[in-house]
Length: 437
Image 1 (tube, rainbow, N blue to C red):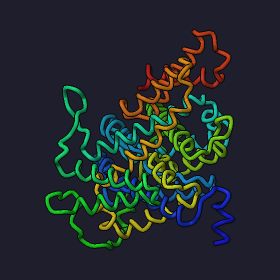
Image 2 (image 1 turned 60 degrees about the vertical axis):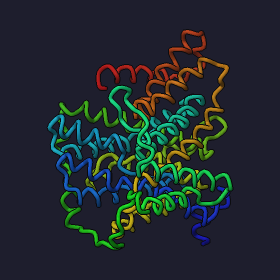
Image 3 (image 1 turned 90 degrees about the horizontal axis):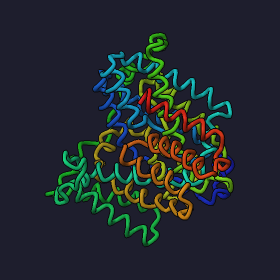
Image 4 (image 1 turned 135 degrees about the horizontal axis):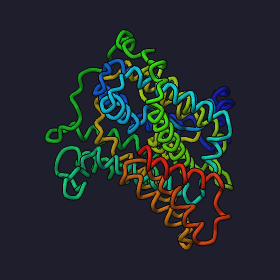
């Protein structure tokens, strides 16, 4: 216990062992879906499902443990959604790049990230973001993850005429999610510890009731992982093939999207956790970004797409997680999931969706930190915030915020309020949308 206190400084961070464990379990429950979704996406690119399953878990453990010990922050990492789709459908399927070469591209991106992380560049980028945009990023991520939760629950579904519409609320998944949301809402109002976790478990049980049929049938607890399956993707990256002038644009695209997805998540969740200092800067930002880069580089060797900081970490923060111990608990549970895949697999997406909706609700409170009487701050913040869920991209929201912010400041005679780096990034984002996006 003394070692835990010395390593993670629980008292100094106003937390305790029980809180950190509950927070770690909650983070695990809200992001456990990735160990099934990521292999399914990469399997479409020709990669073996079982091998990617093992690689996904290995990438989570490496990145999350690195984050825990380098920063003592409660952030978990995993193969990024969106980045894995770009890997599979755009690079491998669309461009015809072999998946081994695509892994080589991810590895090179990770090396570049490590280089940027041990220099002041990435930290300068994170800390140069204006406070209004930091608040907007946090609130925007809240909207984004709530939107993801509503989609996972089939409460919001696709519709050709209007893009999205309300789903059939009388069907199984929406009923499970609505039940879970109500349970969590009541428990939170009563200030019950572990509200998100209890809500997920209650929704899972509700989903198994006759007539609901959302929770899969229980088919056992233990399943031995196969190292031979992992061997099909472990170390199979082709770095030499990735060093190709024709693939430079792909490397830059991965680099750009990953950089600002990570920066946005770090800023958003850190704002929620209260980590930002009086000037709005994130202490140990360079270490957090280094952990992210280590996860990406190691993930490529293990056999998975870009590993990045997960927005679902906000669920653990919402449960009171404040140190790297939360991340270690999460990583340990993912390690166990290698052996207990049948048990982990019975928690349906509809049961974890309420946690995302509730956390999104909490993160929206950060809009109060925006000066709503100053339109040069409000408009860029709103554009940043609303773009994230509508474009389904944290990085695109940040990009538009960075473009709008300096332009409005300049044309209202307030150019001195803009950090020089914001001008550079705004110009780079314009070029990104023109030539890469």
